Image: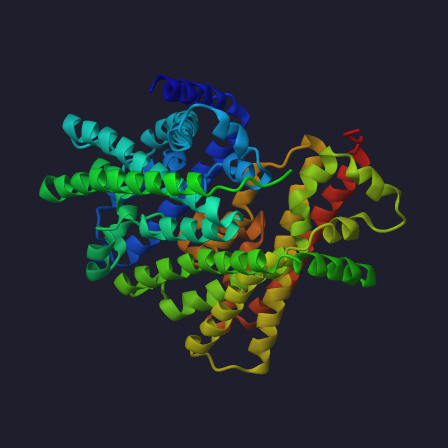
Length: 267
Length: 257
């Protein structure tokens, strides 16, 4: 366990180094958030009754999504890992007395957390001071905020576990481009990245909420905005834990399989 | 032009060496922009119109914008890896050749994997046309052609600005994505829905409204007929872009070794 914590700390402080890149990212995300909210406003003005969340919670959802983008966006996978599989550098990793799956898992966690930490604070600060319906509202209660933090971490776990599956699959396919693109667009759509899940029609939404993708950003963002509470919330958290274990277990199986028949590329 | 054709063929041949990867990438590209369409579809399941635009009208707008962007992207995305050309000192070699610099940068990379996205743009474009329920006249067809020309010009101009800034910073700037990818993403809806300030910016700073909102109105028979000519005015956007490029080339002090 200590080895993996060391990996985590190493990556975490590495991620904190890129402050200029983070600044550029913050500006971009702020503009994206603004445009997103303006778009929802247009729909809200067109037909307020058909709006499935309150406008204020939608704004909170959008700002939180932008602030914690680095935690949940599937396209932020690590190129280094894919490269090492293609060019054979993976052999160095395999020589070490550690498990590849666990190491990459802790590494991805650290990368995402450090990126999110750098970017989220300024976005949240600015969003909190925007005028009433457009800004970021305060969480409903202290316990809701705590639950938000817990589900945020669980959601991060599910996201990373899913990305790990893609890494593992690329042991078998070598070229990862295609798998990656398909995986990324599926996650983006089904996790509520394109439009929040409550905006889907009822029957579609009920199916989507059971999928692992709904356990990523959907749960924490909606708990914060007060859209998810009571029994449905407990179910959602339970599902999050289930998917975290299921995806991780599947990843470990693939890991064992891949290690048995791995071919080192390059030369 | 002949030279660009030659660059084009070289890239086509090199990409065809890796067929499977190429096809998978195309499918991926197709899926990525398909998401946007699905998102719109589900939004309009719930809402009947936005700012007076119905689903079919928004689809037409989306199809045309996507088409404009894809056209510009497949030809001008060579500017995308311009930062690396600058950093490695490759640009010195380009400068000493007796050909136009822009042409050479354009030819340095032609993105065939974008075919998936272009294919999607074509599909959306046709679908938008089919469901729009517009009585097509010659005037309207010419308007669409003007929109495509103007749109390609504006997006190419933005790519050119992105590259020109590299002369000064040596590094690509991430926030330029707002103007290119962001415009594609949010250009799916007519720009008027984003409120007065954004609309004003999109008319006078970067002329998105001229290639999208105004001619769309004239297509739908709601605007003045003279709106059809506005996309051509948007081509003027290329002038300051080219000026910035020239300034950049003059400022260029070489880098790399």
